[in-house]
Image 1 (cartoon, helix red, strand yellow):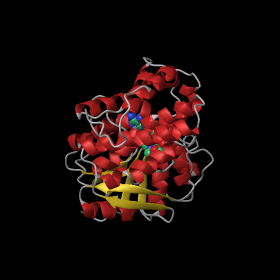
Image 2 (cartoon, rainbow, N blue to C red; image 1 turned 180 degrees about the vertical axis):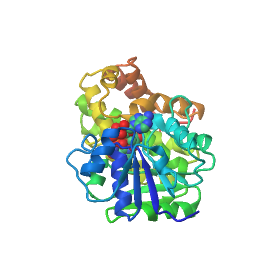
Image 3 (cartoon, rainbow, N blue to C red; image 1 turned 120 degrees about the horizontal axis):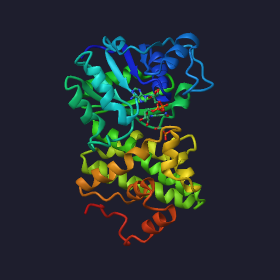
Length: 337
Ligand SMILES: NC(=O)C1=CN([C@@H]2O[C@H](COP(=O)(O)OP(=O)(O)OC[C@H]3O[C@@H](n4cnc5c(N)ncnc54)[C@H](O)[C@@H]3O)[C@@H](O)[C@H]2O)C=CC1
Ligand SMILES: O=C(CO)COP(=O)(O)O
């Protein structure tokens, strides 16, 4: 694999911009591709992205473009468009070349239409690419401001994982290399769903004890599904699993958590989605996560009630009764059917 200098980031939203800044701080040459020409012109002319990172201006040099062909010569690409647009973005890339370089999946979700992890979607659309994942506790706003955090960078090829970690390492951004591509995706996808549940508990004023209990039982679900799919325990208890779950299930900075708060306060999911506000990936992943669980004989009761609340078939109060009246069991039970 060639060394990583030229880095392309696809996606001009909050996380794409924050990761472009990080790569520049790490000393990489960065091209940021954004679909929205306004984002491109704001970055080019004023070094900021006010729509997605309001109040943050940057000194780092980032080339912004809305022409996808400009990423063709990158040594590595970071894919940072919403999870459900991953296939579409990859298909657009495939029209330009075969990209036999690392493609780092940074979105957190599972493809709704197929139930596939994003790494599977990548392998189908760009079979020559080297699939990698970057995930962990990292609010775009914090990262863009240079506040410290640590993340997981996973690639089946251990050397490539280490090269990517080095390529993205900056004074306030510490990537840990891993070879567990599946595990690194499960945490990010499920924590968004579980954060909606925790937000609903907060919005309904059910208390901090309920929020902590739900986070812990949510972690049990994340671990069960991850293990069934072959994830390593260290990944699930690490930055991209427990680390990101704790962050997202406890902070109003999280869009998924805030989406849950609004549900808890009585808003309808369909209305929130129709309003097209901030991206809450968990709302798009809940149902497909439950289906994935079923295919692997894994029970995901919290994800199940979140999916039902989002579809409008269950109220928050009924969801609470459903969870509290499940048969009593040993904490160590596997949750496999
Ligand atoms: N914001 C954050 O703190 C973090 C976000 N993520 C993940 O990163 C992914 C992206 O999130 P954000 O950047 O925060 O979202 P965002 O809502 O800030 O930005 C999304 C960007 O994608 C663009 N976009 C939407 N559909 C597109 C399409 N079909 N083709 C090309 N571009 C398209 C939008 O124009 C926008 O620029 C999500 O999966 C999220 O879970 C992961 C870690 C942190
Ligand atoms: O993934 C994130 C932090 O690690 C961002 O969470 P939200 O998408 O809920 O804002």
